[in-house]
Length: 506
Image (spheres, rainbow, N blue to C red):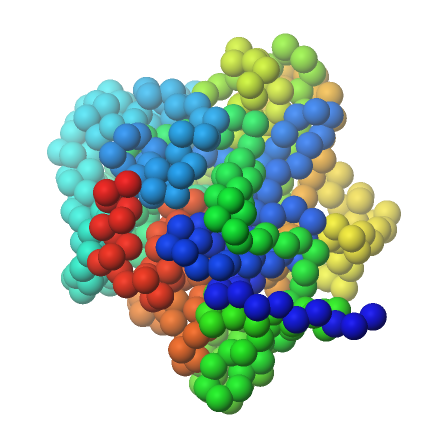
């Protein structure tokens, strides 16, 4: 069969949120866009799957910044999808709750800074000053990032922001161990590490959830669906089952992307939404220097994860319009410090919002850290749609034992949970690797380190002028971080001032 060649203005490799968001922005500006996806479902971390008629998210369990006038709301409005999303605002007095072993209190985070402060002061009346100071600094740090506030400007290189780690900053506020743990409690959202994760990472993430917190009703894949629709109605294409293996450079620019089957996609610009390391591995060019390749190889990825997705018996388990973070120790940074016997040291519990019921939960997702080395012996097996491979009985037993441990841990905090389970499925770091395209199933891409803040900053530009990068390794991860990374990437073609004005005037 003859191989096909196709011509576009912009070819985007990977249909994660970063790739689709770039596609919409550029299609809106009149470019002929083609997004290529190797899997049968678009969306990367936005993918969903169904078990017993319950829709589960793979990656997006809640999102912040969607109130009118807030950053993500404004960008989604510009993209034309804000009014199409099925969303539910989380409990304003209790969107996140921290639970510690042997302590009956649920420490609740409330939405809006005034309520957030009031809520925490009710548990720690003598720490009011520390809690207020914490909020002031979080807001101040966020003000230093122009694009986060939809303004044009360069990052203010304030060393205190980049060169302070989150835990050290918290310890300047108080010596109250429980308050320290409560303030660090959502570190699972960024795979935080004590005395390593920069303060700015903590601040940018926690701030947009305090501003407002939302869940996607019937799954986050709706974002991908609506973005793809916006691309297609503007004459663009979103093509699945296309695995790009080669980016060919000629005369100092990429001329085409070649798929596994030999088809070639020509364009003026190429945007890669796959991991930067994978991107350079498929780029045939001396313009990408070995020193850059080595630097990417040397960067440490964040840890991986084990999920149990549980379908509950009908109308048995109350829906909580909140998330729960549990810690087996006094220390909220403990979840990645486990042995085989002591796992899990912590978990996050997400209640699945469904349009069928607001009173009862149809499903819950339990998520805990897991290192890739635990599934090392099955690393040569792959299980992606189209190439499904049975990893064997021993692997199934490994997952069953881990699932039981995680569900037992939840039962201790929520008595009656287990007797109301109808069915469950689980996913290990291998699933994360196979579906997200990182070698080690990394949850949030490159790990940030306050000691070398610039080392982990990967530019959206490469040495090849028409090859750009986007996604969670550029800038920040999460729905907001990745959407902003798409603005950064697209601005390399459109101009930052022009694009930010367009977004603000939407």
